[in-house]
Length: 465
Ligand SMILES: Cc1cc2nc3c(=O)[nH]c(=O)nc-3n(C[C@H](O)[C@H](O)[C@H](O)COP(=O)(O)O)c2cc1C
Image 1 (cartoon, rainbow, N blue to C red):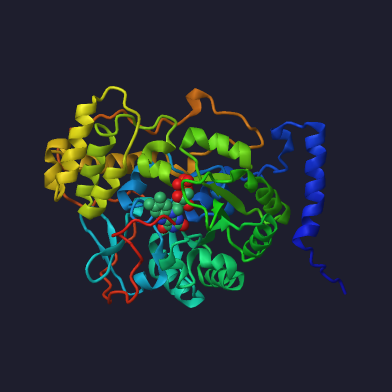
Image 2 (tube, protein in one colour):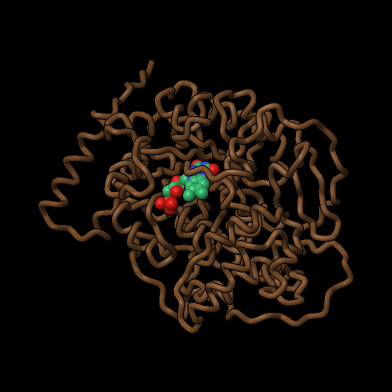
């Protein structure tokens, strides 16, 4: 009878380290050094079907993603990120229990879906982002994680488990970074999610580095064996702060290790990537399949474009405010997000930028920003986002494959950032504005109760996870 020999991390690493030393000795260039083989050929029809039906590991490769961010990863930010070139977007972490009893309500005019708690929306989304949306869970319990995932799965494409939040509100309950030192629990949550979710819902995880590389690889090996489709590695340890440089150079070995496991899992780099152009540098250093951006996108959600919006006080801010108002997005959250926006100043004068910031600081609601946004309803700009997403599907915004290691020609780059012009269309009929691919009937309201354990900071306080 054939027996399977367990190969430990160090045994597995030995040939890898040897091969790397040989390559370094021979001075082989980076593109040759990569051991990644090109993805198996797919017929155009199969590729299209896969894209439409559900995400696979391949969809997590060669992408630039919006990171999960409590507060800052709000719906309008995700929509702007997708419009400007993000391949996929992660929603802010929600603690499992927080969503369980939320009431799902669909706005018949805008199509916005809200999961409402007793006093506020816990999570909002729109059908246009569903093919690109990964919902992140904070959990320390496989059953609750599965229940939470089932609650939202009709509106998302994947479920991600947060295994990196170092904040006490997360770790004291055994969630977030506490899972890094409890791999049995971590893996049991991922295994339960993979077992209980339908195949069209991908399961992924986001971890931090452990202090030792060997321990990190042991953990990664276990996580990859749970059947996830992609693993994001925030290249900081639990004790490192955001101002500490991310140790992205540690990732290459992890990427090679995961590739050696032969499961085709995507490894996503996270930490200190500033935008689309910088993603090439990060990939070069790490060999990661994809790159995920948090603070760069918090400052400017158009950073996913080769040409991010400049003069944000005149371009991004008014547009964002109009869309947020049209979508009836929470004012406090909108104000917080807008206050984070920064960008290069080219034609704007300092006085104009300062006036915008002062007006925002004093505004008590959307009407307080009328002098900045004008009389626009936001419907036109929202429709423009929907058109942009439908015309240039975000999942087609890809970094060049590392095997070719070539930069795209200027003409091949999708110009996702439009000039900061306004669309003077008359307001529409008020009929629900849904993507043309959204044929399912708008579901009825589901009633329920508020969560006993609200998301820490969800919607109200900043968390650097
Ligand atoms: C405002 C803010 C909120 C965050 N919320 C989350 C979160 O909900 N879940 C998570 O896994 N990470 C969260 N993070 C961490 C980021 O996803 C990311 O791992 C970290 O900021 C490093 O990436 P960066 O260097 O691109 O900023 C948050 C970060 C920020 C700045």
